[in-house]
Image (tube, rainbow, N blue to C red; front, side):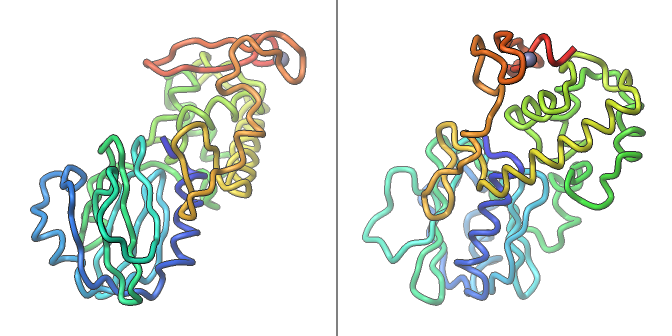
Length: 272
Ligand SMILES: [Zn+2]
């Protein structure tokens, strides 16, 4: 599933393609992604509006439209956007086409159909966005905020990092990599961290996310950028998906455990 760096990459690339374009028409080939919104209402809410800006909040992609509306998208497992010349017919995984005023088409593709698209009149109307916690790269995400937030919870560290109501945007890959970079045990309770550990976690979070954005995210299987290229951060992963391989620092085999039905990868020696 795309995490913060992948969604940030897509938002930045979409800005280069669709900013200033008006949505002239919408074709829906499969309406799963619209949830309870009626397709006709969805189209009416977007048609004729200009895409002013694409942004990210947590793992959500947000199209800012004018006159004011917001299209809030979660890509889930396999959701993707592409911008193409007009096509004769939709491909198998095409779910929606947004016809733009320059003749090109913004395509929403989603093989597994778990992605969601919601139109809201104001950002505060989005129930999904209102539940999100702190943006890890925002100036408000200080070491002292992190210390206070961790101190309020006994949840093990790895699931704590992935809880979108605490920090928004981290998933399985980056939570594993951040804890390895910080040298922290993924199973220890959040409120058990001392001051130096919180400082290392804070630094590692920002460093790993910034580097992953710089490398246009991680492609393990499905993630593709708007131009269909892969990300590059998979070449910089230290523990994720590497069970049994030697730790890059100490050569101890990387361990894999299950935490809340998700795999956690870590070095049993470096992360004690
Ligand atoms: Zn190690």
